[in-house]
Every structure is written in structure tokens, then in C-alpha cells.
Length: 211
Length: 211
DNA sequence: TAGATTGTTAATCGATTAACAATC
DNA sequence: TAGATTGTTAATCGATTAACAATC
Image (tube, rainbow over all chains, first blue to last red; front, side, top):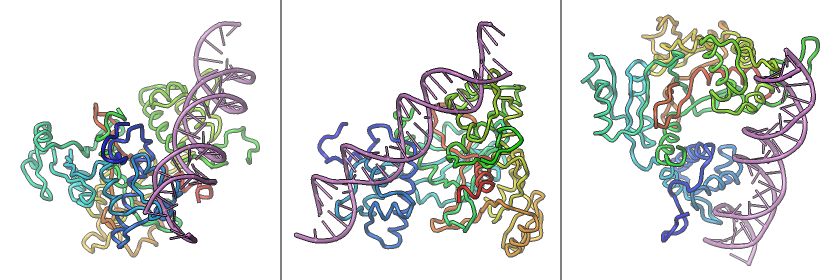
């Protein structure tokens, strides 16, 4: 709804309203494509990608169609091309500086995790109220006094935060571990922090639409 | 489809196929009801409950109707009654002994969290390969050698596990923090460990249906 | 009784899938 | 060219909502 010169691929904001479910599948496509690339695969198809994730080929194509045209009839999708496109859509084509607030067990555990750095997120600052921690570096990440949060956040352009303070009415601050492997006969429910952050990144980038 | 004497409330397995979305809303109803009870509320209605969670009254009633009849026309739902019913449905009317596998930062953080004990889960055993940890107690929880896992799991009747080993192709083992509070103008994506465990508990209890 | 609220059936809405012309 | 595969429109399926008789 506002295309002009450059073809019809509006890799941007998704001009309508994109269902949440579609956005979360985007993260799954991205993972799978990265895995395929890692295995040396140059191209894939909606059928292949769908089969890997348990979706129909039609759904894969439909999902992607919300954002533009990324495929090549008769050929399929070039992995690298599609990865680039999806990262742009999710907003992870840039690096997101992330702040961790609270350095209990939970917060420290998060600092230790660099894994999701591969997906475009980097923890650049941590905040706590404990004077013993303030001014230190933990896992190479500077710890600031909580009251400096606004200032540091502004200065470093931080847009995403991981609140790791054990608080809340229920007294629960919750963490859900997940494995990618599928152990046999065992029910598994899990969450992938990078996926959550991607959803968040998308939501922030498209803030107008989702209020 | 196998009712006999005791009325029509089949608080059990959900005789058909219950949509995943319904089960996850059940967890939300439960939280809200517990909060209401905590505030001294004796009863509530589908309209009230729905409004608190942003659902329609019809949806609340429909969701509950999957499992039986818990309301009282003209009156609404008695909080305590409905809490009991939902816990039974989710399988958290009993205590679930839980094992944590892997005692890195992540695993240790999980041991520290007793919050979800209120929801019917208790971490009773931890496993690691580090000889320095094996045989110790961390946060009151005994640490066993990984190779004793099958034995301990059997002996203690453990059915749920939190795999907190930093592994997997992506090198990511993922944790997602969540707060219950809704900070202003900020996008938030989060997960509640107790909710995840409830979903898992439901899945295990109704294993036949969800394969 | 009148007012409130349930459980449930029918109507609506949205998301998934099937089918196919267009393209490489 | 023949085979493969896209993007997209139409058909199907499922989930949400509206409406209402039954009940307290």
C-alpha cells in the first residue's frame, strides 16, 4: 500500500495486520533456514521447509506472502536470501543492545548466555541495587546502579530489557528451559529466548500496528 | 462419554480433543482466580473473569465447558470450587516432583526458585556430571551423578524434568523471563514457568489424546 | 418475582489448506 | 520442453462470539 520504484517486495512493516502466529512461525523458519545453510544447503522449497517444521507447504508460502515475494518459481527459496529477508522483517538485521535488570541467580545466568548473540541481541548493561555489584563487570558486562538506568539506557540506545528481578504478586519470576532435540515419548514444552526476543523486536519495530 | 453416577461434571481427561489454546487459557483463569481469592472474593462471573483477562464472557464459559459444568446460573462461579476444578484438570491437584538436569548458572537459578512450588511443582533432585557437585546439597536439593538419573527418577516417581544443559545445535539453551506487571508503552513477551509446567502436566496426564 | 448468569446452539470470523495459473 | 515450484485465489476447517432458553 505504498510501493513505488523498487519492485514489489515490501520487506518492511507488513502493511496490514500480521497475525501473531505468523510472526512466531517466522522465527522457526529462520532457525531452520540457518540450520540448512549450516549444512551447506543453498536453496529450499516451501514443501521442504514445511515438512521440516510440520507445516504444510501452503502455509509456509502464505506466511511469507504477508511480507513480500521472496521465492523463485520453479526453484524455491535461496536460503541466504530468505534468511536476510526474515531478519529484516523481524528487525534482527541490526544488533539490539539489551539490558538485564536484576542480578540474582537468574540475572547472572542470563549474563552467562551469549548464545542468542548470534540472533542479533547483545547484553550490554546490567543493573542492580547491590553496592557490592555496582561498578563491577560480570562476564564482561558492566553493572550499574539501578538509578542510572534511564541515563545508561538513553546513552546506549537500549530498547529491550530482560527483567530478572524476583518479584510480582505471585512471587514468581519465571524461566522456561527448552531443548531443540525431541526426546522420545516425552512431552516437552519450551521456550527459546532468542525467539521471544525476536518476537519482541518485531513488536517494537512495528509498534504502530500492535499498539 | 463415560459418565455414570456422579452428575455430569467430568473433571477428567476432556473426552475429545481440547485445543491447545484452551489449555493455556486455563492457566490464566487459574492465576486470576487465585488472585481474586487472595483478595477475598468468593465468587466471580464469566464476564468479570473475561474482562480481567481481556477475553469475552462467552469464551470463558466455552473454555470451561470443554471439561464440565462448574458454574451456577444466576450466581456465577465460586472461586474456590473453580480453582479446585481447574487444578484437577491441569493435573496440579497433586504435587509433581521435578528434576533439574544440569547445574550451570541456569540450573542453579532454577533451584533457587521455589515460587512455582505454590502451583504444585517441587524440585526434588538435581543432576550433574561435575564430581565437585555430586553428593552435595544445593538449596536443600540433593545433587546426583547423571548416571543415576534413571534410578533416582524411578525411585522418586519423577515425571517432569527441566533440562538446563547448555547444549543443542544452536548452542542455545533458552530462558525467558517474564513479569506479571505491565510496564507502560513497553512491548513485553514473556513466559511463566509455572504455566509451562501446568501445560506439561496436562499433556502428561492426558497423554493418550495428544500422543 | 425480577435480575443475573449459566451452558449451549447457531452465526461469524479468521486461519489453514487445496488448487492452479504463472514462471523459471 | 517438461518438471518444479512459486504466489494467490477459492474452499475448508476451526475457533470465537452472539444470542437465548434454562436456572438460581
